[in-house]
Image (cartoon, rainbow, N blue to C red; front, side, top):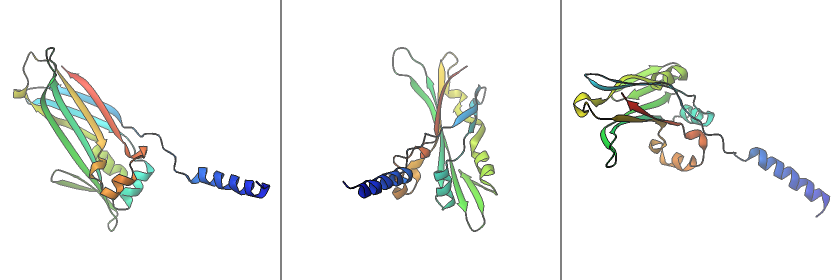
Length: 184
């Protein structure tokens, strides 16, 4: 090839490497506190998750795409003779939206809606949960050995279908954490 063509090929390759989307590192959620308490009410779970929204996730939120977060807890009984038995399973869901006309963030869980002026305040409301009842006392035996499997994640299955296809390989959208702990 001629030297001029090689020059253009090199310029195009350099531009392509700069503009080509690179897979980012997987964002993670840190559980700064995670505690289980068993009393006469049942099993109570308290947690605090520490995370920030990646830029692409925050950009989608600001463009009107609602984000869904899910916490799931399962109480299981250890058994030596068979698979562990699931005693209880519960989930808690949060919906985070941005209202551009009022410039407010809204967090919805169950039938409760709260408005916040900043994204930090809105995220703080869904980052923690205290005394969440995950099992009734009647479901647990006194001599049973139990443990809790917990997960907290950004639920991308509830995003609009075209977005689910578009974010298939992006690591920024895989915010999640899992924890397993024995119940004393």
